[in-house]
Image (cartoon, rainbow, N blue to C red; front, top):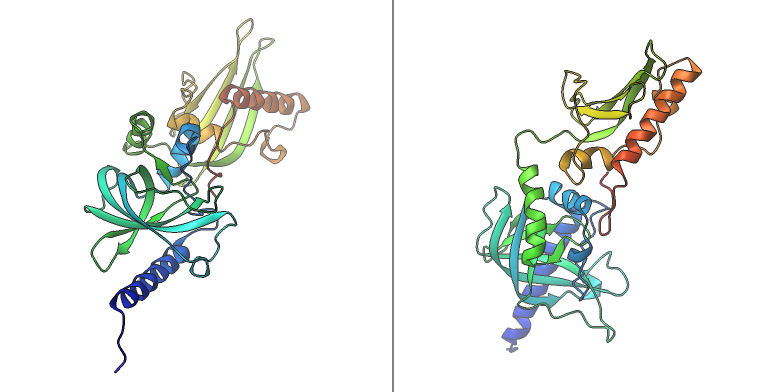
Length: 300
């Protein structure tokens, strides 16, 4: 009778479980949501911008703080799509705090993450490292641990009190009942000149994911600086103001609107009115400023 080494048998079982879990995660992943989690000394959490945090949080059903307990390197042949210079790790971690999400996570969790190799071709040792994870749940392991699927590149970020302090206001805004709708572009725009020289009003109507009405108004008055504001509803409020920088309403506009007003969206036929609409839109776009991203790609 052949004698079977128990350690060898258990290792085979573990690797088979890793392969199955990895296949499930890869099947659920979108092409833009690679599972890279870089944790060098100059961690991505230090470079993450407001737009990065909103992008990661908004597409994650759970955001949590965890401490890594164990890591296992997944063999390259069992890690499809692995980039050169990276290793895929199977992480076992302890849940420390649930920052966002309604799902019951439990005390233990597991997930896959790709990390860069060091100069010796080895993955970093992450045991006891505290991280913030942006993820979706992908079931439970045989031992009952929550299986997580990271939702983007750098969806595993090194934890620090300062980083959590930056993240919490973003999560609080996204949890509000009156979250502004996702802006997808411009529906149409129209500029109307007033009776006085230098007087005009431009209305820019935006296209949103759920069809909610959102409009931008630019007002010009003689011998006064131009002002603009946003109406988040059916009623166009001439007293509306521009959103505060680094706010969720600012993000909806700055990170979604094109740099220039599409010619097809400009409803005016008069050349002067068309130029005015285009100029007013440029004024709004410049006032918003750039949507800076350091660690994530635009969604969609």
